[in-house]
Length: 253
Length: 163
Image 1 (cartoon, each protein chain N blue to C red):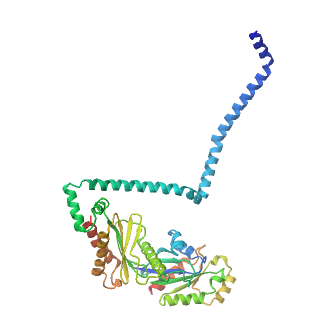
Image 2: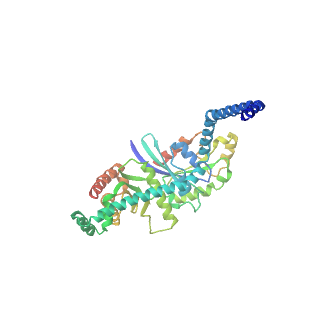
Image 3: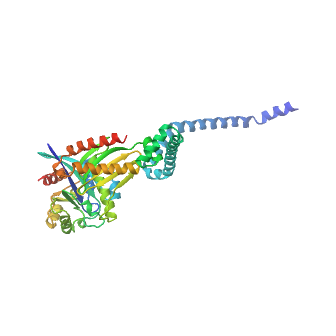
C-alpha cells in the first residue's frame, strides 16, 4: 500500500519537484553572485567610503574615541605609578640593610624624606636644556641642550609669550612666573632684570633639587652675565652654560 | 659673517592676512593653535643680507592693534613692526593713523613697515585710488596668495633693523 502511494506521489508531484529543483539552483546561483559581488566590487567601495568618512569626520572620530584613549592613558599612568610605588616599597622594606640605613642618614642630611630620596634615585632629575632669554624681546642669548629638539629660538619666543601672557593676565607688577609643569618636565625660571634663565628638567624634582638649581642659575648669572649681554656672543654664553650645567648634572647624578 | 637676532611683530586687524604672509615667507610654520590660545604665534626665518645674517623672530599677533586684549608686553623689545591691512577691506585701514601712532608710542625707535595685502584681488586703477587716499604711505602692496613682494618686504625690514 505504501509503495503504491509513493509511486502515486512521484507521478503527481513530478512537475513540482522539478520546479523546486530549479528554484533551489537559482537561489544558489544568486547567492554565489552576491558573494562574488561583495568580495570583488563592494569591498573596495566600502573601504574607500570608510576611509573618506574617517578623513572627513576626523574631529567627530576623535571626540568619540577621546574618552576611550583617556581611559587607556589613565590606566597606563596608573600601572606605571603602581610599578614605581612597588619599587619604592621594596626599597623601604629593606629597612634593616646597611645601605638603607645609609640612605636614611643621607635623606636626613639633605633634609628630604626617605621616600623622596628613593624616588630621586629611581628617576634622577636631569637638566635637559638651559636658555638665557631677553626679558622683553624673547631673543635667545645662549643655550645649553642635551638633545636637539625643535628650534630653540622659537622655544625662547614662545616661553616669553607665555610668561608675558600670564604676567599680564594677572596684572602682577612684582610677581612673575617661576615654574611651568609639562608632563614629566618641569620648566624652571630664574628672573633677572634684563634677562631670565630657563632650565628644562626631566625626572623627579624635589624641593631641595629645585632650590639648588635655582641657586645655581642665579650663581651662573652673577658670575657670567653681569656685563651687558650685547658684549657677549651667543657662542660665549652657550659654552659657559655647557661647562656649568654638565658639571651640575654630573654632581646630581 | 656676523649673525644677529631681531624680533619683528606683525600687527593688523583680524583677517588681513598676517599669518598667510608669514606662512608664505617662512614656509615651515608651527601650529596655528598657539595663535588662538595665546594670541600670538612665533616663527623664525633667517635672512641673508650683503654683510650680515638676520635671524628674524616673527611674532604674529592676533587681534586689533590698540586693543587692550593684546598683552602690551608682546610689543616689548620689538626691533621692527609690520603693520598689515587688507586692500579690499577699508575698515581694516580706516584707523591706520591712530594705530601707527599707538605703535610709535610703544616702540619709538623701531622701523614700521606698512603693508597693503591681497593685492591680487585688485586692479591697478583700484590700487592707485587706495594709494592716493591712504593717510599713511604704504611701504609695499603684497599678495600672500601669489607671493608678490613678500620676500622683498621682509628683506626691507631686515635691512632697516640693521641700519
